[in-house]
Image (tube, rainbow, N blue to C red; front, side, top):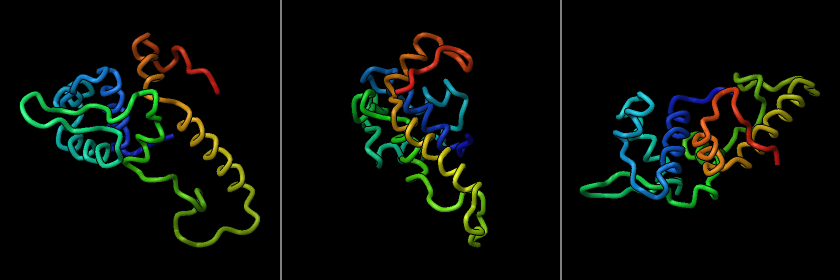
Length: 146
C-alpha cells in the first residue's frame, strides 16, 4: 500500500505524539527525527488538528500533543485526517468511464480495500508506539490480529 508524502508524515507525527506521553512535541523535533520537510510537516499538523487528532500548544514551549488518548486514535483516523474517507468506486479505472459489468477484478480489489480499512481501523497509536518501544522493525514483532 502506498500513501502520499503528507499521509506518511502524518503517521510519523502522530506516532511521535503518542510516544511523548502527553508532553508537547514540536514540528522541529519530528522533522529532525524523520528527516522530513518542516514546512510540509507544518501543513500536515494543521490537518491533524482540524481532524481532532492533535492539539496545538501555543506560546513559549509550544508544540503539539495528541487530542485524545493514543489507545483511542487509530491509524485510519490519522490517514483520514489527511486523505479524507476511503474512496468509493472503481479502484482500477481512474478515467471516469464505467467498468464492464460484472467486473471480477473489482470484486477482489474491493474486498482487499475493505480488509485494509478494517485493519487500519483496528490498530491504535498506542499499539504502534508499543511496538516501537520494543524495537520491532519491518520484519519484527507483529500486532495481533483482532
